[in-house]
Amino acid sequence: MQINAKELIYSYGKTSSGRVNALSGVNLEIASGEFCGIIGETGSGKSTFVQHLNGLLRVKKNCGALTVGEFDLTSKKCDLKKLRARAGMVFQYPEYQLFAETVEEDVAFGVKNFMPDKTEKERAELVEKALNMVGLDYNEYAKRSPFDLSGGQKRRAAIAGVIVTKPEVLILDEPVAGLDPAGKRDFVALLKKLHADFVKTIIVVSHDMDFIAENCSAVAVFKDGKVSFYGTPKETFLSGEAKKAGLGDTLVTRLTESLKAAGADVESDLTAADFIEKFAAFYFNDKGGNAL
Ligand code: ADP
Ligand code: MG
Image (cartoon, rainbow, N blue to C red; front, side, top):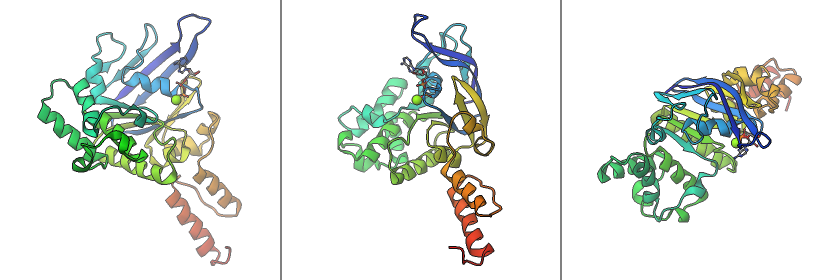
């Protein structure tokens, strides 16, 4: 499903004195199949924008246009249940939204809610598939209480509850926030697996520039309620577009700069693995290994 926003405007609050313009004319086209990162300073409108994508926030009259695949979010007739089954949203700290007595019931909720036509058997199959997909073995975890799981497992269970409808688009708002480095690596691996095998398009909001630079196929930069730039990670981080929007460099970019300052003639491809290779080539090959 392609996503297309044109001059999308959104403000919170009704009175003109209390009005906050959260989106002030977003133009953005995300092709089907992208792993799209959304970055921008706090308050730039990222969360407000992604909450439009599954109809949680509605496009108001004369406030631009938004389509997600065949769904026209500008229309009052837009079937939100159908849309939400196909464009799933994972909020920040999704583990806090677990509520049922068993993992199975929790994950099944999305099917009951958004796909009421499914039979019990179909529902059970979807739940099993979703749990296995996020790395929680169905036989081991289905009957357990979600509250007895570890933090990482809870987050996985919550994600299973969103992907259970087999959405085409998965939207995640700050999913790596609060994870330690190992938890983050596991989570990135899960997202990559989901993108390869299960959901077509991933849209992920994050403050973590290295996570975005290493994993995304496209990056939208939000500034003051607008998209100030849309391009590849290289275009975004190596041409100063992220900096222009008030964002920091990635760690790999900073390390590359320091390698250049030491005399290396290198360009970064933004991945840590690439940096390590170039670092090693500079210190161990070019200089005969005596620099360290
Ligand atoms: P981001 O996710 O990039 O940090 P948000 O979309 O959350 O940005 O916020 C955009 C603007 O809208 C900010 O000025 C923020 O204070 C305001 N805002 C966000 N949510 C609400 C809300 N529920 N009520 C009023 N203002 C809000
Ligand atoms: Mg936000």
